[in-house]
Length: 314
Image (tube, rainbow, N blue to C red):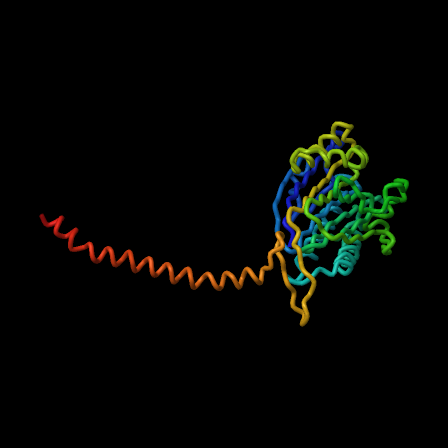
């Protein structure tokens, strides 16, 4: 497993009355009443962690419903995963894309002809590996060793607006091909920071400044808040959904041993099997010494009892 700390932020921006963006953070979608200005931080150590953002399009009441629909499907697919098993991410992603597209197409029936849909950018942390799925122009970055690296396809943000709309889920009832979304896989390292954001951040703050803000010596939570501050300071012309995830302690797993067994090591490198054998040796010794000391104390109490009785009876 990986121990992580995450901060999720939603803001309607300075030019919009409603926020059609939404996010998914550890089994939770942001409440509708709080999406105008929302912040939530969590520390997590589950084997499987899912984070996602969605940028709904189509206007209040339908764009936000499209975003909410796809995030509910993300939650449903996460709940279907069997505990203890490794995530088959390509299958997981395919189910989300296909189920999401069908559901949003059904949602669009009363709105035929309107450009309604949503983006989806998703991060799945499965023990010591991170997977990403990206569809549309929402972004995912990895900040590692002082360098910011995009994990989404660069051409997703270079498309004209109308062409980019075709990449949103559910539009026009078209089937989506694998070329229309990107997936990545990354081995985790301690100190990695993953950043998911809608274009409310990427249109306002360029990659160089994002990297500078994440390299700032301030605390991680404050670094993510500073990204929101910069987006609003530079105009805040669009809704914003933002999640920052920092890897605190990725699990180090040794190579398999003969016979299919695995030797696990903790972060410091000590052999857990050796530690267990040492503990099994110490436990009986501890109990033996405990009962010896208890016997000595009881003996002293018994032998000194007559003396105390004489003193009390005087």
